[in-house]
Image (cartoon, rainbow, N blue to C red):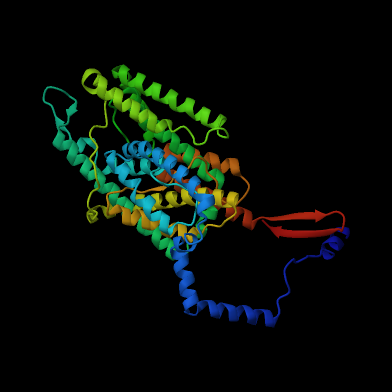
Length: 455
């Protein structure tokens, strides 16, 4: 039949070099040379492990120094308020956010391969840590019941004990997640970034923004609702906040709204006049300075009952060992945090590497992050990653982008960030399996050649 004849006449074109015995032997010889231990090979491995040894001697002072100084000052100014705010998300005292903005940044300078990403505290990671800290050290565990009231009260000793335990939980998570990242980097697992597609990470970070917004409502309204963690925590938190809406502190609400308007307005100005401004207006630090002065001058805490951060200790804490008894309780969460932290870092690193014409190593980024977190944990820091305004990962799965975004977003909002990430990654991998097992026939009408390929 005509159909049978057309099938027999199908031709396949293979577009690759012709492999010969000489070519294969040459490649085998090169591989053998690469596996030998020589001075040149050792030097190359050292440069790979410590990229600063490679780029620092070639640093173009005249071209880069001024720009790096301005950029460093701008980033440092933004790190201060972000460190304080993200420490609250992590359920630890604000000063630990400052620690996390110093040690990891210093370490990444030596071990990182990206020239442009900013390592430090990040809302998604901080929120995930805070959920674990509250689960293991809930307020109720340190509460003293007042016989004259159904509401519990705290004294300073209980608050200090609660915060100390939460810090230990955060430090334990940081050490384990750092060791996991370090191990994955040594085992060359940097390729896993290809499974973290753009819609997956965007959906996850958008869901994280919902969690962050929910967690900050109580500070904006000045209420004291119950804090939840785990699946459906967003819904429970909203219900708890609006149940206490009648106790809103008007002074706290007005202060918060003024700060939000200033930040949003300045963001629009920076975006509109970014080509005319030498540096972006650092409204975050300006708001912190002005609001601190107003709070102290008007005694907002004593007069209006506005919650304040309080005294922040000066100097750095001496290194200390994490509490090993907490490792089993936080291990699963640390795995999720290690994966999320790496995905954020490698996605942003690839964006800038593509834009500025250089390459980054996924394996070395894992090692750099692992060292930042594992070493930093001994100095009371919590897990860090790059500060990310938008998400982009190398697209390797393709197709079904809207579906992956929706699954990632809905799962992360409803189930929580850890379970939501697992669902989203599983959904993305399923699309890879489906596409690699589905054959697509395309025809070249000009040459009557049919090509069967696998996407």
